[in-house]
Amino acid sequence: MISLACYSGGGSLDLDRSFGFLVNDVARLFGRRFSQNGNRLGLTRAQCRTLGYLTRNEGINQAGLADLLEIRPMTLVRQIDRMEEAGWIERRPDPADRRARRLFLTAKARPILGRIWDVANETRDEALVGLSPAEAKQLIDLLGRVHGTLSERVPVDAGDDPGSLSSPRGAARTAARGSARALTGGALTGGALAEPTDAPLPAVEAAR
Image 1 (tube, rainbow, N blue to C red):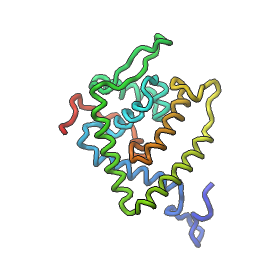
Image 2 (cartoon, rainbow, N blue to C red; image 1 turned 30 degrees about the horizontal axis):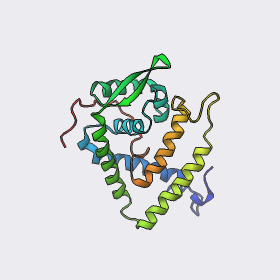
Image 3 (cartoon, one colour; image 1 turned 120 degrees about the vertical axis):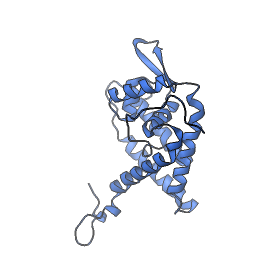
Image 4 (spheres, rainbow, N blue to C red; image 1 turned 45 degrees about the vertical axis):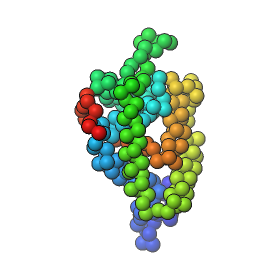
């Protein structure tokens, strides 16, 4: 339901006062600017996002990661195939299920994580340049409270263990808590890295 405060005096919808519109459009613009700033990484935004979420959830299976990223499993499989071939991610057998594979970062991937965070911090600083430090902190605090409220209202599927990384919902909630903390430090955000793409991943990291 859209608040009546979002309507102008003439009864038309004022999107500039709509919480949902502003949150989504800020995420869209933030994501586009992240992509511009991140061209030097040699990774797509979706691949950066995959690495960022996998950092907090190493050992998760592909189904859980797809649910976490909110993309189709087959899309993720293709992306993981390319990233594994390029040496960013490795699949390991699941000791509890011979048919399953668990995902881990490689030694090659770990150094570039810092560069991804640098791009995220650079983009955050650009986005918040018009706010005072106190205003920026208040914005993050308020968004964190909204995030927490909505997270509590996401139902857990029957049979899922909310604390288990092998449970998609459990993984999503674990990552959501990590994302809320990351926002305060100016790290990876869902909005910045939310658009999956099948663009090729170079096998050799872009020059520093």
